[in-house]
Length: 272
Image 1 (cartoon, rainbow, N blue to C red):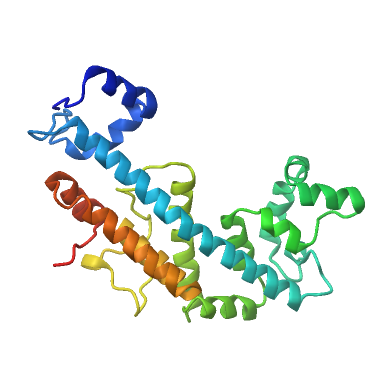
Image 2 (image 1 turned 135 degrees about the vertical axis):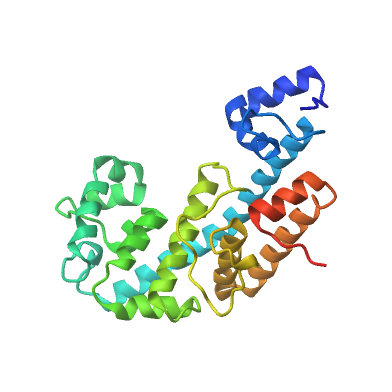
């Protein structure tokens, strides 16, 4: 590797990012199993790939958050209005499958109550309540937990209504896509390696989404799904996401090594 920074700057990068973590970003530049690099690999290219990944996570996080909040709001609103006589419907076995209720019971412990002020205040006021009502409690559940509750609703009416509002008529396809969205969301939230991620199962086929090279497991395919879902919420945000992703990848187009990674790892296709 060509070390095209001075020694102090390289040490700064290593102390900031970490040798082990940075290794994930120079791995694509290796040409064999003995960790030999492709000729003319520069340390600066590794750093550029690292910050490409950081920028991708930052861009996607904004829109993933918007999808998460919108989905949670719909689940709480529609279910709470349908089951007005059961304010803690998420723990009602006549409404939600017992499997998820047991998991919520494990999740809803003293630390959860103490860590979330509205929940803590509720139990101070209503000392005999096992749970705070859904519109308070579910606000503090993870995206994955909310999807699990949604998936385990016994009445399909609410599930199908929300799926259709996101532009997807097939409920199982909607759940499949949300699972992959949550996977990307978790990688972004925890600072994971994003550029070479692949979903363990392929994304569902939708007539409105064209996956590049028919690859339904790539990051680019996940971005297309995120873009599709955000469009159902806000056309303006959809246009912003499309522009930000395009500008980010275009900014690395002149670097042949990074362009190759964007095309072959992320599976993005540059416009001609």
